[in-house]
Structures are given as C-alpha cells and as structure tokens.
Amino acid sequence: MSEQDVILTREGLEQLEQELEELRTVKRTEVKERLKEAIALGDLSENSEYDDAKNEQAFMEGRILELEKMIRNAKVIEDGVQQEGTITVGSLVTVKDIEFDEITEYRLVGTVEADPMNNRISNESPVGRALLGHKAGDIIDVEVPAGVIQLEIIEISKG
Image 1 (tube, one colour):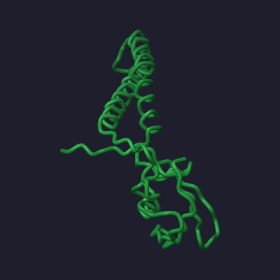
Image 2 (tube, rainbow, N blue to C red):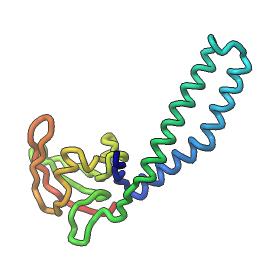
Image 3 (cartoon, rainbow, N blue to C red):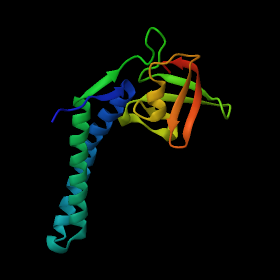
C-alpha cells in the first residue's frame, strides 16, 4: 500500500504538529491519570470509568498515529501564487458568482485543512478543482450538486 502525499500549507502543518504535541504530552498524561483513578475504584469488569478511559486512550493513540502519518507524508505548499499568477493550493482567491452578483473569498487548501464554514476549500472540491490553474479575469463553469455556476476570478493572492 503506497502512502499518499498530504497537501498542506505551512500553517496547516504547524497546526497538525501542535495537535500532535498536545496529544503526546498533555492528553496522554491526563488519560494515564484517569486510568489510574479508575483502576483504584476496583472491579474492572463493571467499571464504566475504566472503560471510558480505555476508549479515550484508544481513540487518542489512533489520532496520534494518524497525525504522525500525515506529517510524515506532508507536502508543504509554500507559495499560493505561481509566477504566472495562476491559482494553486495555498492561494487566496476572490471570486464573483455571476448569477447572484455575490463576491466570496476562498483559501484553496489540501483536504486535511478544508473548512468550508471558514471559506477554506479543498483542492479536491468541485469549486477548488475548477479554480486550479486559472488566472484573475477568467470566468469558469463549476459543476456543483445544484447544477452549474459561473464564477469570475477577481483577484489571486498569497493571503
């Protein structure tokens, strides 16, 4: 099984590294203490505190492994605008929905960092895929679940 590159911005990599450090140091210690306290309560066969702590420990260790793998396979995108001014992962893009005359700003990121509620869209999403490689002034058609929308690319920057 080949391990796939994880496309990240520098900021995204730093966030993953911080989360991993937090889990390894603070959270592991907290769960270890919870386990000690639960074991001290006695009979482990009917000890829900012990079961909860073991489940939390398993989840946390799984997340640590997942983060380690993502960081190991990270491909950091340093520059969101290539020299020719085309949109790449990391770009901050201002677009105008032609039909509704609405302007929106998106940060194009890898799937790990995607957060649509904060306008951080994945390079694998329909809008993200459609934006890649285009320049300011381009008008693109984007297939979305509701149909096809037209977007005009107003501005591209590193953000």
